[in-house]
Image 1 (cartoon, rainbow, N blue to C red):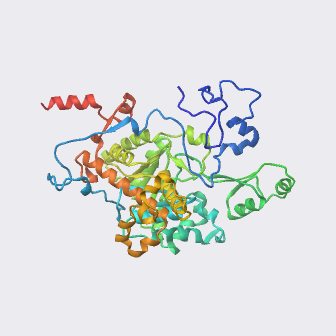
Image 2: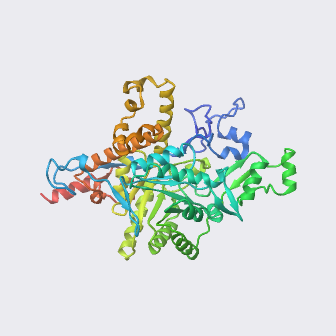
Image 3: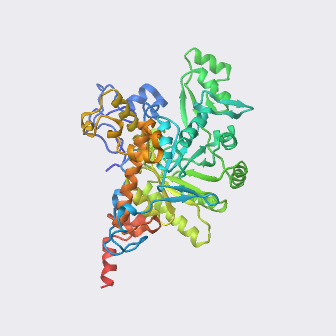
Amino acid sequence: MSFSPSLGTTVTNTRMRTEAHTSPFSGMCAVCTMDCPGSCEIGLSALRGPEAIYPFAADSSQFASEKNYPLDFSHLNINGRVFGARGTTEDSDAATYAKVKVETSIGKKHPLKLRLPIVLPAMAKLNWQDYFAGAAMAGVLVVIGEDVVAKDKGLVLENGRVKAAPLIADMVGAFRKFERGYGDIVLQANEDDERLGVLDYALQHLGVKSVELKFGQAAKGIQGLGLQRTLEDALRLKNMGYLVFPDPTDPEVAARFNEGKGPVFEKVGRLPMWDEVSLKKRIAELRALGAERICFKTGPFDPEDLARILRIASEEGVDLVTLDGAGGGTGNSPVKMMNEWGIPTVVLESLVYEILKTMEEKGYDLPQVAITGGFSMEDHVFKGLALGAPYVSLVGIGRAAMAAAMTGKRLGELLKEDKLPQDLSRFGGTVETLFSEVKPLRAIYGDEADAMSTGAIGLYSYLERISAGLRQLMALNRKFDLSHVDRRDLVPLTPLAKEVTGLEDYSDLMRGALGKL
């Protein structure tokens, strides 16, 4: 049995000639015939070379790993109880799911309230306007992704440093417009952003209070890659300070390109080269510039690296560390890297639990930790919180949240065009009847709610569903406050899940129950 997908995928817009008959090891069709027009990834590579490494239509789509990992959250079931109530009084009128408390906070010196234990990970493409606005409406943490300035047509640089970044200003403004005392918008920076002074500018001129230093992510462990089709684009990025290969400022390279010779230009993001001295110095600089919360973002790297990052976060009073597991989605990563590297989320969280437990035993002051990587619904959120309890206090939802924002926007457009799908027409033919959360939003924002975009309403509505579902699952375990969620709320269904997580299975729980008779 192969866990990897075949060499035909919608991610690269390829397909297998004989999908039902493939070689599990190679991913090729069992019979490769000379009559085939080359519809698989090998055929695409024969046409497009290195370009075939990347997903198809990255400017209008999101992507995720297709690998069928041997362990995921479906291998854990949620426990349930019928006696007692933790976090409220043992009273049937009080102990109801509607009263379960899912508010939380982050921040060591500058606490920040969140309506949900949710962070929406880095985004800087597609429908970001509604993504950031909906996050503010929902009262959660949301992150502006890396490399925004590379896309900013209004960017102004002075001596290689940002002097004006209107696109980041617009992104921050999309959140601030609907901010209501919960959540915050975090600005992320990679190595290239740091060289350009992106965080410095945003802290001093845009009122940003929360920043995130990036060490890598699940689907794209190296930094961003992007093919540049024109010499003009390659020169613009090179002149901004980005690495571009081959060098478009070389007259011979430029001449060959104009003659139709030589490779296509590629912008290659710099790998961060942090050491503990430079990292600690940078954290101090950011705080001096006004950063109230410092966050780290990293992916499923070697456990030694993860332990080092968490130790530094502890020593420097970092407010949040987000760890991104393999299997999650991303905007534009090499497809094989997305499928074939990294630690699956359940395994990653189990390792992080052990690291943090050991750190606590040794007296470290622990940072708050968020886990992300493939989470989409309330059962995932509950399982993510329970598996990492008490050390993992937030769950990141990326692709699913963006899907909600995009769907809400699209349905709003179809509604205006009177082309709403028939199966949705049963809800009504107006924004108010189609989107059930418009009335609750009016109670918060007044008449301003009537001018809200349907994409932002869609994201808010989706997160309200997550909130209700999470509270129901907590009530199932008689847990009426997030602080009471723990690892006994999960039960492994397979030997592998038990071995990796260290949780008791139903046989273990039965032996414990019999011992109490």
